[in-house]
Length: 221
Image (tube, rainbow, N blue to C red; front, side, top):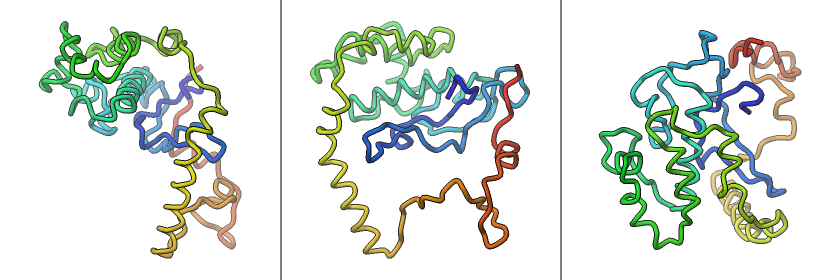
């Protein structure tokens, strides 16, 4: 996404889905914007996102770079996925837990979670991603090259085997809800091919120019 010049600005577990083929997808580009920013100076200024995942610079209403805040939100997402808990309320030095994590004594923050078997590599990566100063955080290349990210992982087949029961339960729950409410939440195969603005017989080809004009500005070359 960043390679395409777009910042997501609302990365969180709720916006990450697992397809029926067990591929992981990032969804909901409602807050997406060009990395160049509306003023083409490389910064964004709109205060938005989900509070728990918002980087300090957004919380403080300061100009911010889209890639920086996305990586911060990814760090929180990794943490929430691993701890199955929210580590702090807001990324502010007025938040006691965040101040402990981002301060000089982060070991005290992690002490209560060590019993969960969290590795030192994971702690190092997440702590660096959640630093208060954006300039102190790693870049995406740093994150991908980190020892924890390059550690041993299961195969996609093993992942599918592990998640198949959860997938089947999710399908059953969806069918049960749709039966109870009479509402079909599935996305039709034609999604993306028709313009929601309607038209002749309500069937139109997707208006790319209209979408881009109302969603993103192309990053300058």
